[in-house]
Length: 509
Image (tube, rainbow, N blue to C red; front, side, top):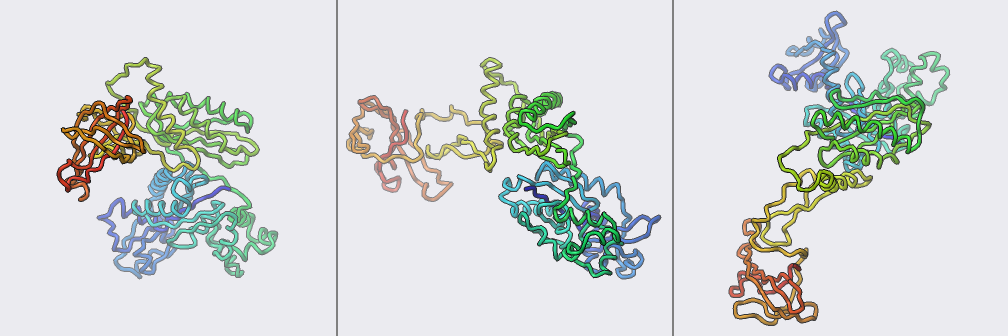
């Protein structure tokens, strides 16, 4: 089931002006945009302040000036508005690979299969509203099974968001006004004169008389809203991004054929990336079916890469998500996000082939994990300096993986196996210098042949009050059976405030 998000920007033109030149158009004064002088001078857009003052789009400019004396008036610049809306549509690529324009003040996005990346559909809509608000735009959003239904629902309220469950868009549309459909104003007024004020009342009438009186375009808009007819969206692509399109001689529908097309496009994309000195971070593969609908898959990488085998494997792993239907007649491979490749003077002592494999294996594994359905995030364990060894690792995302700390800063050797939680042991004998001589672990007595220490560690008093004054004395010991262990005692053995004096096993060498 496909899902479509529609965004309506009711104050698009006035907000754009206030963002571009805030000093010229202060937000506390009513601002309107009117048609050019050679057309009828009517209002095409109003700001929220002007809306509260009683002004509405479609009013004559002279009437608006008589109602609000201190009105700010700006002539409409259609080209600049279209360019700004196109830029905002390209910005929406972070949400899904299929954003589209709904001129003059709306956007679409085919979010099929994307909602789980943002915690669900409700959270996804909340995130879109938050990010648009940070850019200075108010919006109304709706999500349903068809783009036309989402558009009508979004334009039915000035500032809101709604999610229509799958299969329930007809019930949601029944009480909406017919003016929310993309029909001509004359058609809307004619329906209103007949008493057909809602979409539900319109859908209940016989179709033939409606077609004769208002034309077939009205029925087309109604069928699109009800999900009976699908109109393909004009998907927007960023111009400066690498994008390759191919029209196929005959429609294809098998996984092997799709893999062959991917194998033909990826080498050319990798060559273009290498020429730019960039690596792909996000790749979109769009398949246009014979019924004009689009199937899309998106893969991401943990770091910038232009390696052909790595990108091929990522894309081929996602072929099973493509539904070819009656066949795919055109494909597009787009690098929707890229970054410069990191370069440095350090060279590996391995051969070139071995070095590439050694560097690529962890990144390839991370890529395959983060692109699996249902996986929200992948983390790595990164070393960090801490007073206590069990806290010597932290969980970070692959993008934030920092360079490991210099091992030379550790004065003492560390065990190969380090326990997450220290294991309690009972020391039954001590040497005169305080070193353990004998201890009991799980009812088994171990005698110590040699011991080296102590290595004293102090608690991180600046982190918490519990660590203030805390002391641990660590010993590297070897038992008579050949075990090399890492033991420690809480406290210095003399002062109660430094620790309880209990002994623990921390790791095995």
